Length: 475
Ligand code: ADP
Image (tube, rainbow, N blue to C red; front, side, top):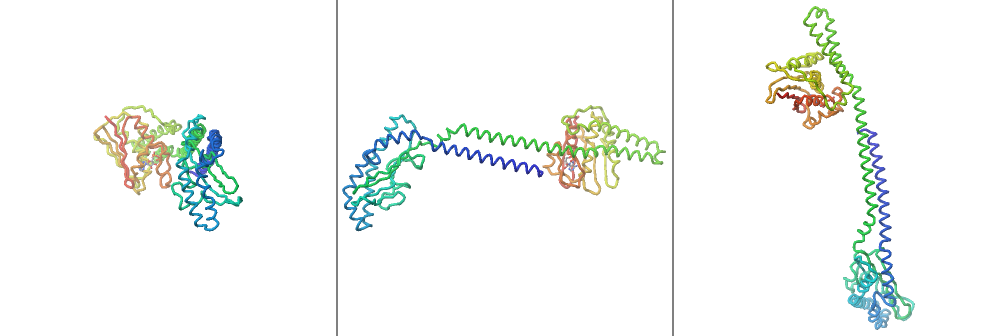
């Protein structure tokens, strides 16, 4: 990936993450707000009715009577212990609390009261409750100072551990995680006169599926924010892909323009070499050589002419149309090889040609056939680092018809590479400077030609050993 693409992607990803974070904060704040306001009205109803029911009472109707019944007769004894023996006072007060709370739990009327409130006010949600005491303090004869005998933040060894919970003594209910939002009542009842007590308790109530209910309220917002995120991601991917495609196409175009010269150069150099030979005195007297050179010039000029016509839309080849005519295959291939080999000296190209054992006529478009074979031959030389490049061309019978085999001793390819070589613009040797430039179109064109002829093409190759391209012409 190129540098600007990386910058573009990084910037976009950072922007997207910031946007996602802002969205998340917004959604979270909405959730928090809804969560706080959730059940606000119904909690108010419960608060009003419950506090009215216990206006002169503690915890629940009848709670005060139970506590008074235990505490009042023992105030004096506890006062004396408090003044004389702190350890005994602590022990006695804990035992007393244990006793009081066992009775409170046994005789609590909070659940029936809450049931009545729900019924009366038509509250149908299934609610979970918690009634818990956080602090108890005693006021002795001085009428000034309270003495703490229970503090919900501490653990007391002589109080039954099953009623001592994280945030106080549990009297009634099964709400497991009470919080600020679920608190309905928080009361501190005291009467600062001698031999009284102060008690601090809280009632919590919460719908059993509070989270789901809040999320349900946020449904529309969540869906919209999710959809907008998805839309941004999709648009980003589409834009990026188009951008990369455009970039690739423009790179290829530049490459194509730079290299198209090479395409023209092949027939042109053949014409120039042939022409140079004609100017040679010895050849001028040799009519046969002259004719053969003039034929080369004619064929190559023809090819050049056709190339000019083709070159403008070569990059856009998707479906090739061919004009098939009967051709002598042996001769056709021979001419192509002659024109091809003229470019190389015998010292670095060893070209062998094995003709079909008998005369064979195939229906083909000779121009496209020549381009096809030349592309394979060019690659056999191009992707070959041997000092002497061996290329073997053979036309042999095949069980399906006739096969033309082009074998080279070049660099070969891995199985993975052979999967892609016919793709438009695919170049495996992009980064290597050993090999001459290319457009990644040669074999794509070959495949188009083969398909247009309804022939078959096979590649066998091994990295480091060489490649064999097999064209199968069915009967
Ligand atoms: P180009 O030659 O312009 O890169 P081609 O379509 O002709 O495009 O070839 C595609 C790729 O196939 C090449 O980049 C090369 O990696 C691989 N290839 C083609 N022919 C051969 C060969 N005879 N030996 C090794 N690799 C080859």
